[in-house]
Amino acid sequence: MKWKGNRWIAAVLACGMLLAGCGSPQSVEDPAEQTPSGSAATAEEPVSREIFAMDTYMTVTAYGEQAQEAVDTAVSEIERLDALLSIGEADSEISVLNASGTAQLSADTGVLIDRALELYQDTDGAFDLTILPLMEAWGFTDEAYRVPSEEERKTVLQYIGADQLTWDAESRTITLGEGQKIDLGGIAKGYTSSRIMDIFEQYDVTSGMVSLGGNVHLLGGKPDGTAWRVGIQDPENTTGILGVLETGDCAVITSGGYERYFEQDGKTYHHIIDPATGKPSDSGISSVTIVSDDGTLADGLSTALFVMGVEKASDYWRQHADTFDAVMVSEDGTVYATEGIADSFSCEQDVTVIEKDR
Ligand code: ADP
Ligand code: MG
Image (cartoon, rainbow, N blue to C red; front, side, top):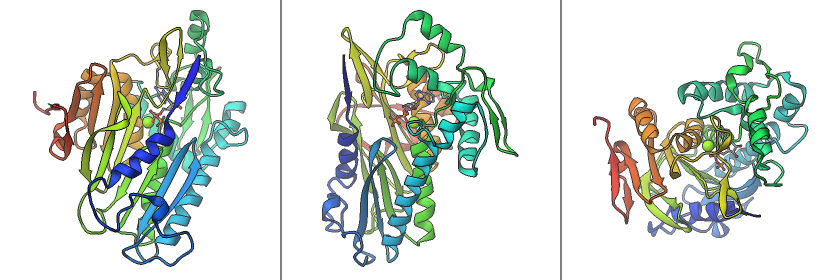
């Protein structure tokens, strides 16, 4: 059995590709060449810091006179949210809840529970925050990867379903159902990147970006006023890019089966689980990228639409086209883009445009 994870590659890709071809001397192409931490920032020079948190490499970059303060505050915020939400730390708020079955939650975690439950309803259960017992059964939490027996999977499936927990939003009190444990890993990074955009705005940053393990959130355009260029990873060749999206002021978040998986007896098992079957989702999709100004939504939907598959995901987009756009790649290599971003997505391959009115 072997495990592969290429989060580092994804992070580097996102930074390197972000300004691909922009040619600007102020580009953020190589974070190592940027203003070192502690030196005075100017409006033209970026300040950038890299950290490892939430199980991935992250880069925070900002332009502006208060860029240093903005980036430092953003890094503290990432560390704070990681400590709150991590399922790998026994004393995080989520782990304490999972151990005891009931808790009164902090304001941040409360917001995330609200959003996760909303996504559960809206996606017909494709996004389910109670997925953790299945992640454990498949060994994704302790990296002891294994295929659970039919019997174990069926037993664990009984504990899955956000409709089995009770949540009182006013008092922020949550009580889990029997055998239940929650995992906000499907939205935590998107929520974090949205928080960073708020921090940037507090420090009058007009141009900035955060890359969280290949997921990108952008504030404004580039300092020269042009659009950012975000590379979307090729799920078939994870060291290459599929195409480039010209955009700004939004999150671009990708879920792919290639991000974390193991192989056993010639079969590949990835970390996005279909709550209906209890198995790694098998919808025929190999990656989903969501573009939205709402980072939490983008993150949650990248996971949910991956579970849905192209057809259901396209219908879902038609009903919610005002809140997001998407690029999807199916296992047969077909590339799809929704109408709203098709014109700003350049791709070497033919792109099938998903239209609102069929
Ligand atoms: P990543 O976090 O690797 O960038 P995703 O955003 O797709 O990718 O989130 C995958 C994570 O979400 C898993 O590691 C797990 O914690 C959680 N997860 C897996 N399947 C589901 C699901 N169906 N609903 C909600 N969360 C899920
Ligand atoms: Mg997600």
